[in-house]
Length: 350
Figure 1 (cartoon, rainbow, N blue to C red):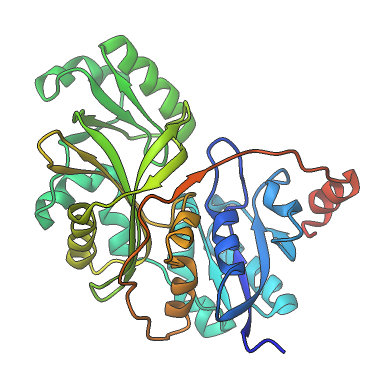
Figure 2: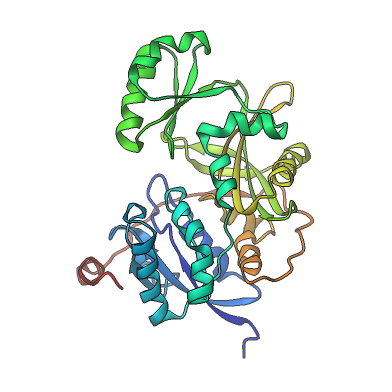
């Protein structure tokens, strides 16, 4: 007989494309929990998200409305799913959906008994790429200078504040290095067509990119933090392989950021380490990254710890992590019956 507690957890982010969502690695982490026996309910937006068809990881999947449908529509769909599945915890994993889930957090718990552990609205807004420079100044954290632009016409006047190369960033995802005004214009058009306005222009800082996957308890304490350097990067800038680092200064930077903001929930921090060992914070992603499974490999099951925090349990911070552990992503072909695809497409359930 298993002494593990049974939990039903709904997880989003089931895509595993060339820019993968964190859902599948979060599920793998939860399946390896020492304390919970989890039944995973997948929440999908598209019918081609691979996680839907990974039946060894996902017990049942429901389609949910896109974030643009608004909080009422999303709540009603979750309420229906809950009436069938009796959810304990909901675990959203995409930036674009977090705003809705943060707004619904109290309602989901009070009316449906579904717990979650997410940043506050203020935390979520303050760490937006567009606000990051002011955020850094407020908390004494080094952040490259940046500004928002709303039209292609503003590119010619960027030379007043920036020199080339410069970073051109979409408001949700994607970033490119522009070495001249023509490239800047091209990336502006590409990113604004995909993610909308504004576009963020950021000073380019020379150095090595390093990342931290961490978990804050909402009171200023870091529950876990694992630093990583990308070993192999796709053309979209995504880590396809990475290694955990022995970098106490970087962990201290993450602790400083979590303490200053009283960060609540999972977080990915992206830094540039310069040749003179200065750390510049490039980006704050308000949820676990797609490489979160590396934390499990290093001895910190951060998704499991987040579930405990969601349930209101006291969680002791992880004291260390294993250095020199690598993750290497791979893709493989799943064979799926067409009737499964038809079922999720027509009924919205599988």
